[in-house]
Image (tube, rainbow, N blue to C red; front, side, top):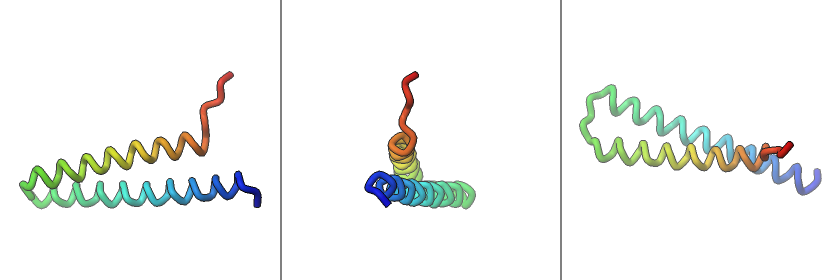
Length: 70
């Protein structure tokens, strides 16, 4: 394997980990909302972390498949 394919594999592994973390936060937010938990501060923090992860997912995705200028 050359350096580039190792980088791609590392990026894909990072992307998978980010997706898993995002899904875990999504599940936690849903569970708190369904249980009637009124800790709005905790829910807001979790949602903010979800947004941060979503931004990171987009950055890593862009590194894997960069835009091609035609």
